Length: 256
Length: 262
Ligand SMILES: Nc1ncnc2c1ncn2[C@@H]1O[C@H](COP(=O)(O)OP(=O)(O)O)[C@@H](O)[C@H]1O
Ligand SMILES: [Mg+2]
Image (cartoon, rainbow over all chains, first blue to last red; front, side, top):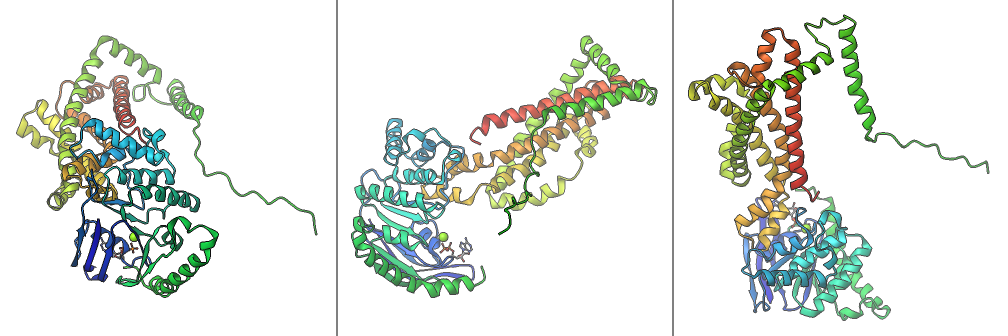
């Protein structure tokens, strides 16, 4: 499915957070959103998935969701948003329980989601006993179990250490290659965006507007190869040039 | 270069470690001091009987069955009053946690009525319900109700907003968000509230029984005092302490059972 963001603006009371955002998320692409902290990235993502009604503009979707899709717009959260009183399997099953599935089908879907991300042996473990990386794997399994049409990832790796982040990028991409689910991905980490994205959208400081869109013109599989290092470094420099002044100015503003 | 000296150590301390032996020793020291004070004639045994005397009285009362009767009467009132107050308190408190209208309407009422010592309204309950069981149960229920309301809505407040948003993002219906996210998320706070409400129930049953009852530990302790039977009085107090410990033990067991995931 593709997502069309048309003239979206948002204000929390008197605080304008987003202004005139027009954006097209193409079917089967990963779009990364970067911008200084507080510029409205999470707000935009909440609007895209129908969790927040924008004060201006609208979001439309085009296309048909994949077969067996139960929740077209599905989030993965920075803080994982797991229920500590449910086991790993219970957390994944939560996404299915309010849908009319047979017990067998529910169990089958949960087991499949857990095994694709290497969680099968932790099915009966409580999240409190898992590392951050394993917790986010649960968050990803819970998102995949509903077979989403659009994945909305709000800084999914920001709470993790660099090595875990690297592992999860590889695992996520391997999974993503199978279904090529349309995805919008927020990060403040340029390297992460350059690993995942087809295109990177740079937002200005608050109120967030689209400052630039940068296509990552290196095939995804080859981005960590030495031959690509020069091109990736050049893109990194371009992005940082776009961000530097915004981030500096945003850092000097008082928190709302 | 001069000789290398080890860096002076400045850490350590400020860590609590369990010292079971010391806990028992403190208790034993208190009892020993008490026994010595009465044995040496320093304390008048009429006003402060020796622990051994209290223990003997306790044994006698237990053997005669008199104590069991009083204990059962009090425990029944506590159980009934606490259950009623808790059920009503949870219903109102959860509603106040979930619905803005209930919070707006309820909060000033709860704030105004919570600080009233509930024993002060026992005479009113006696006028309404009569001198028998209902007025005592109602006093306990009223005393339990308010802290339970506060624990329940504070527990709902303590549920992270992102969990509720997660439920919404997966299209969970409102009832499912309440049943699967809000209520279990509030449970630890609610159970912590039970610890307080159970203690309140025991305080109130004694107070209520001192005002008007033939049976019950409060009545027993009061009568013993009137008769200058301080050994019986203290035996009653020991049983009250045991009742409180047993109730707290039940709450701990409930916590272990319901909060296994911790
Ligand atoms: N529910 C809210 N009410 C009021 N202000 C909010 C709310 N959510 C976010 N904000 C404010 O809106 C701005 C953008 O927030 P957010 O979209 O979370 O930024 P980002 O994800 O880019 O860091 C911030 O200044 C934040 O304080
Ligand atoms: Mg954010």
